[in-house]
Length: 360
Image (cartoon, rainbow, N blue to C red; front, side):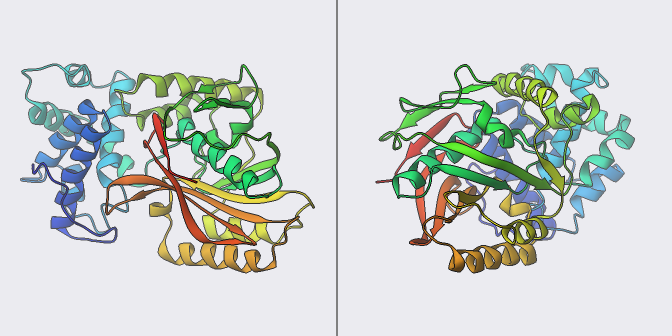
């Protein structure tokens, strides 16, 4: 595979787009310290040459947009689930990052032997819940407070998956030396901080509510296993965080409803907002999965509500999403009234390992 990202648009379709999506995913995994996942995705890509199974044929002839659909990660998630369940012992050397094995042959054999279990993994997008991303949300809220918005936040999250980031009020954060949250918390985050630290302010939360088209119940072992399958195996700390999130959910489930992004945002924005509360929409690594018509509805709803916002009932929008042009994740904020234009506060590692703070 080429060592350069292949240029492609999010909505590209067809066989060439499928191959480019797999090639780019390999490079992306390598760039994000995931060599084993890169090997898995590269091995899956070899199935496209002469697809000999229904699983491979369905991938090769993918009818949707493989990049927007995160097709490589759907397939990789299925293999990882087999490995985690101990159902495919042949994968063990590959997940151990062993050398001198034929990755393509191993994966082809597992696919041929477990096609029934693997095919359903192609039916829906990955659940990429990652608690480490919440550091960006907290830093953005500190910045919004610095701009004069009330430090009492009513948070609405779309694409919440299992609602792990809806429990951010229970976590402790060290953001470049700025301490936020209960200590000790249900989890603690100290991302490598690059640049100036964010503003230091006390903040608290009026409410945290989220939606997902396929919400995951962390208290259900089978659903939790599915979520674990989408964690890249190299990132051991993420498995530790997942166990901590499961424990937190058992103590008190996050407020999570089944709904699409547009319906949820439109409904929530119509509800009364308490004086002295900042209502904020937040999301991370999910916008690409939101259909374009829903993106337009969310944007319109936010801008309409923003036009009615007041200094004591402001509205904000925090997004940590991939910039596919420069292959980085950017922390973007808008707020009403007064900050209607998008402002990039920083860049961040996809799973929360570091934050590059750019705000002034």
